Image 1 (cartoon, helix red, strand yellow):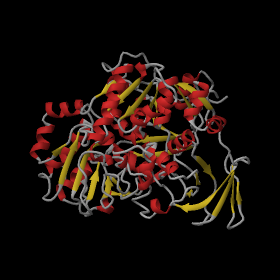
Image 2 (cartoon, chains in turn purple, red; image 1 turned 90 degrees about the horizontal axis):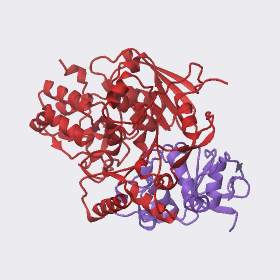
Image 3 (cartoon, one colour; image 1 turned 120 degrees about the horizontal axis):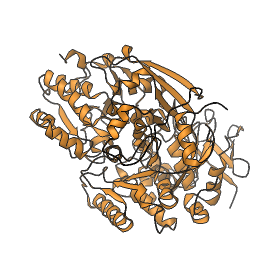
Image 4 (tube, chains in turn brown, orange; image 1 turned 60 degrees about the vertical axis):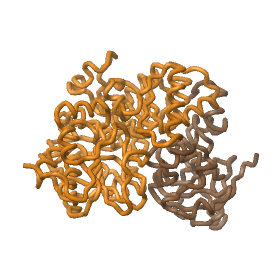
Length: 168
Length: 420
């Protein structure tokens, strides 16, 4: 597996709540990420779902994923082929859910990233983000060890299968 | 070493370690709630994790509250799957119509002082009112709790919120919570605990404290915890057989920030669409037309809330023409109490649409969906665009009395001008 991710920045603002990511009314009819991906951000960016490409990266301001703790707000993003979200900060439930499902939540200063910038993320180097368009490299906050272990296992399912319990 | 906050003390006890803000600890969970909004996914994770049996079925509670009544074969199917799993594994399951899971956790005395309770729903923070460390989790974490009985947590820094003075007539706990959201912002307490304190808190009934704790997640908080006192013990009497000891903060506990709110100075607040922290004085929004009023939810669906709303509605002479008044008791016990003391009859006479106990219209998954372009005022905790199932509606959040005042006038109004 490559240790570099590369993708286009898809820009969002502050306080993007999970209902904006995927409306809670959608999960009544299906929990399948391949179904839900068609409704991503439908209320705030109607063109998003049709234009998203595998490898695209979500880039947001502060408090990404606030509101409901519903986990489809993570799995639907992964279902669209988006491997990482960069934000100045995350809500704690979104952050946990992301780690548990292997979606990379990267806390960094996103203010100088523009829509469409090409970004690379170096997984072997603390998830350092390089903005190819501007040339800037951002060093994210390191993750706590238990989160690194869960991510390294590939998510909480694999982690629990391997360990059977939590080890800190 | 310095003293500890309430959260540090509870997480120390549950992890068996000297837990300090910033530490990562693995804790034994006393109780975990899952709802029809989160358990179906949790059961998928449970199977993928190789789960065969529960660590302790007695600590797991399911509540069917988000899809009440189930309005499609799909949602009915989610309930069927949960019932089958609960029966197989001996999990307590609250049926459709019993109420909102959070209210049931509180009513059945499962959250007691010093306990660690998690819920796969963000408003699990509500039980902090009972001196419980209570926080929301996702479905995968719930599955792991079901298998291991454990959760890992980062011990939060705490913000101490000191309440002084007393609420004046026409001002309510919801106004305190909205004022806090106004002060802290939507992520002002991110990753942190809010620890309530001060003489103003002692005057608040347990039901009032539930409103405060319920809304802390709208400020990003991990939990919102109150100290326990005689009101806490009185509420729990007859609801639990668990032994518990109140957990107090040490005098020299360290806080990341102190916020003081003088209740004497507080006036009614309202959150404007579409952010919970977009709070202004109700006065500044007076006259905004309203076509739907929602009384209910885990924030404002308890007996006390309905009494406050009913009093304003009766004093104001009823519901204005063109206003849809929707009433959703938080639980069957609340519904029964409303029936027993005449509150329900009052609401029926006022022409209210009574929705079965559950999450109701709050998150657009069941209950009444607002029409296009409608202004809604609600006792709920969230007003995000599309939250109630229609992205062209605008949602205002206020106290039960302020919502009732809007129903009386057909526009946002100050309950203090209607109450005798």
